[in-house]
Length: 633
Image (tube, rainbow, N blue to C red):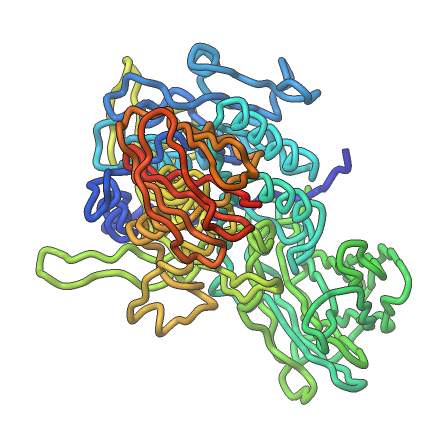
C-alpha cells in the first residue's frame, strides 16, 4: 500500500448550546416527512430495500437507532473495522476485522479506537441518514434502509478504495442498490480538480450503479484560496497566515497548481510556473527568501532560514507533471513561527493559477484553512477568497456534493426562523463538469445519536434514553458532515421508489427538484448549488423517470421479455401479486408509443408496427416503477 501521511477531515463543528437543535426540524426542511406520509405519492417511502454504506469511524453497533422503529429488527448488515487487527478480514482483503450479522456486531459492540480514540462521528452521521429514532423525535431520513459501516483508515488511499469495493460486493450479494455516504474530505488525496486514483474508482463504481454522496467541507468562511489568471509574464505575491491551532499543530501547507486557462480544463496541458517563499518583519520588509523555483523539474528541498538567531523551518516538493491531469503540483510547508510574516511569490507566462493554505499537523495535515491576504503597500499583491473550497472526494464529478444550511421553521410567535447557508459550508465552484456543490441540506445544530462507547465527547446531551439496560444519548452537531448523510438518505428514498435509476439520473433529479428561496437567491449557486434538497419532489420525479436497466445493478426483476431482441411479437412474463399491471412503452426520445395492461403470468405483445430500435417498457407494479429494455429488429 502507498501510505499517505495525513489527518482525517471531520466535516463538523461542535455546539454546546441547544437553543436550536433539530433532526426533527431538518426533516420538514428537506420535505422528507411528505415522502414518509405519501403526500401525493402512491405510497410512503423510507429507504427499504436500499443499503447505505457509511465510511467513517466511531460506530456504536448497539445503538437502538439502528434497529427498526419498533426496536426489534436490527438493520446493520456488516461492519469492517480497518484498524482492528484480530481478524477475520473480509473475503478478498488481508487486513482489518469484519463483523457479519446481528450476533457478531452486537457482541463486538463498537469499533476500535484506531487513530482517533473511541469516536462518535460515524454513529451521528449514520443516525441522520438512516436512524430509526429509537422512539424519539430524532428519526433519520431513510429509517427503513439497511446499513454497512466501515471504520476507515485514511492513512492509505487503497483503504478508501477497498472500503468502497467491499460495500459494493456486499450490496451485490444482498441484491440491493447502494448509496455510499462520506462525511470526510481531504485536500491532498487526488487533485483539487477531481482527478486521481479515487476519482477513477468512483467513476468505475458509479458505472456499476453505486451512488456516492459527500460533504462539501467546512471552509466556507475562510479566505484560504487564491487565484491568478496569467495572460503574459507576470509576478504576484500573497501573504499567508497560519491556520488556527488545533491538536498537534505544526504549521501551514500551501498547495499550488496551474491549469490551462485557454480551454478551461486540465486536459494534457502542462502550465509551468515558478514560486518563492518570503519571510518578512512586522512592517513587511523582506528578511529572507528563496530563489524562484521552477516547476519544470521534480524537486524536493528541506531546509531552514536562520534570521538573527531565530529559525524558520520549511520544505517544498515539486511534481512537474501530475500523471492524472498533467498539471504541475507544489506543496510548500512552513513550520509555525509567529515572530515573522510570510508570503509566497508566483511567476508565470500563462495559466489559471490556484493555491490553498491548509493546516499541517505534526503527524500529517488537517483540513481547515488559513487566510491569504494582500501585503500592505505592495502593488502586485493579491488577497484570498473562499472559492474552489470543495475537497476530495466531493470535487469528483460523479459525487453528489452537499452544502449545509440551517433548517427553516416557524417559531411559537409565528415568525419564520432559519434557512440561511451555514457560514462554515464550503463554496464552489468545482473544476469539473458538474456543479459544486450539488445541493444543500440541513447541517446546522442537528441532533442525532451519540456513540455510547465514546471517550472523546464532553458536551451537553439533547436527550437520554435507556435500551437493553444501557444508556444512549443524542447530541447536537453542526457541519456538512450532517448535511451529507441527510442527502444520502434522500438518495435511498429515490432508489426505493425507482431502483433502476443510474447514479447520474439520481444526481440530475436532486438538481432538477431542488427548491429556491430568498437565501439561495442571495447566496447563490457557489454556496447552495442547485438549491435546497427537496425529497418529495425528487421522489415524484424519480417515479416518473425511465430508469436504465444495467446488468450489474443488483435488482432482481419480476419481469422477463422473450425473445429480446424481437421481431413481430414479444412475450412478457409478469411474476407479480397484481392481476393486472399498467405498462407504457417509450422510444428513446421519451415519446409514448404504446399503452397497455399486462396480465399476471404471460402476455403477448404485438410489436409488428414498431420501427426497429430500442424501446423502454415501464411498469407500475405494487406502487413501484420497473423498467425493461426491448430491442426491436
